[in-house]
Image 1 (cartoon, rainbow, N blue to C red):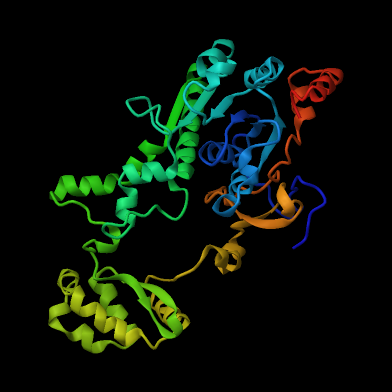
Image 2: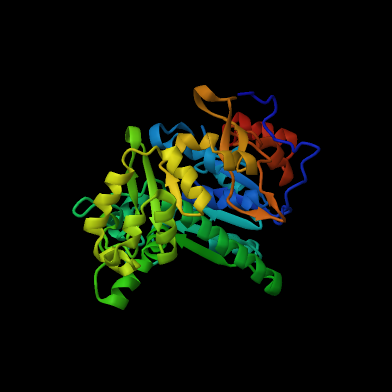
Length: 411
């Protein structure tokens, strides 16, 4: 991989510029981990200037290992970094001046934390009534609001882990679903508040929370119980509404997901795979009959398909217009032909650790505006990369900045 010499990306001359509907909007972000940074990333991808205020030495997420190693580079592109020691009065004043210059403040600390530094909604909106203040918490205000929450905590208490695992074996989803979606819902609320501010001239506080996000995700299963009176079973043990909707192990131990979710698809499935005798069986003529006979039908299908290669099945089902999916791992997706052809991956330069300076691919926000993907304008920032620029933007003279740096108030 090539390593860029500059940390800020520029578009190639032949590439049409992506729309930036939030250009000119300033966002000041007091965040860490995933949920708050996701909200900031969405706003940054849409064109806002997003200022990430980090503690001295940088956000701890920069140094996570294992499953956390991708957090900082994933959720902090298109942002600027300044480090501020909020425990020093001068540092808290720096943060307040930056927040006073903002259209939006984003935070995801425990209740009461921001108020200690005069950075809560009440304090900041008294200075700037146009401010939109986006809080990201474990729980919305109520009996649980002071509990410490993690994605895994709310998945366990909110029914998602129960639905994902096998009976008696609750299992968290394989990615930070509540953190990421909680940040996205926060960004949606900010966009709505911006529209309202354009009408009234006043900002507002908006809130997003992990637990409530998780409840929204399992709402369909709650409604299933309300409608049918039957509790939703964990996904691996559920009564599927479709007979052919499963993972099959085929030649050389490869796996592929196959589906036929209508009677027309079942007929096409049998024709494409040479299963005329199964198609002709009256006991399997309709989807509901096939669902009732899954215990008999699926073993037959598994035996018939066991010697076929996943690539052959994929080509056959693709030609027939049927749903299918080879089982992929995350690392396989760097070579996905659709992502490569459509610009779904973009280069960033890593800022931290022993891989600092290395160019790698990251995934882009999964939308287009005016036919364009929203790309990377700024790499994930180095610690305090934009300190001097940002302090100058709120009126600090060069000498004052150097004095603050010298006393480790900022960096």
